[in-house]
Length: 149
Length: 146
Image (cartoon, rainbow over all chains, first blue to last red; front, side):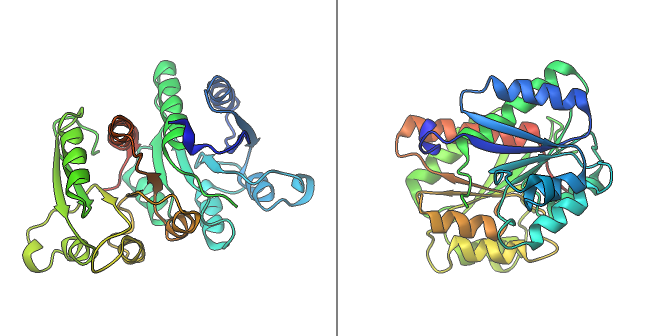
């Protein structure tokens, strides 16, 4: 299953998340994964856009191969970030996985309408949360082909 | 939510290769949930199905679409473009499952809002593992819109 990852370049992941506990858990889960990856974190929607567009302090930021994003974010919501990304031709093909505490049909539908690649609800239990993060990394890093630049 | 285990999931498989159809249907049958899998063999049929036209008047809205790219009459890319540009259809996740690993095919699929792009492994066991991963990820982890 490893042939989907070419060469030895690490998979670049951008995590957009303001909850430090969630960041830590996701970071630790990804660190243990069999495929080499590099996880960057943006703590709000404005930072996320600056990172993706390599603006300001993020001028040397790597282009993310996949984005994991919360919806409720300070300064700019996940919906707004998603909508912006999808309007920029060179960014619109980056897969965006929504990882949110929301379970509402409205949020799910709105995310897909804005072309989120998938929508995952954060489970409440810690073990469940880790299991879900492991499923996400396995599916998106070893089963799916990710677009290149 | 669609995650309740009592419900049957509706899958639309758009695939012209009978061997692949058989393998995918059998893998889903052995899966963790119950599925109704509708199979259409070309892109035109796929769109008729989604629009509930012609022989597909009683078709159910799929919870998910597995779409090959190389299809007779109308390509998978055209089906993808059409489905993702329509307000009533664009929220349905579309998984492109193709033998093509061409960079252009992948880029075009993502640009046209494929939810993910998967290359069919040539090895049979790996193919089955890939289908199992799709089933597991999209039907137990992912929230889908109604």
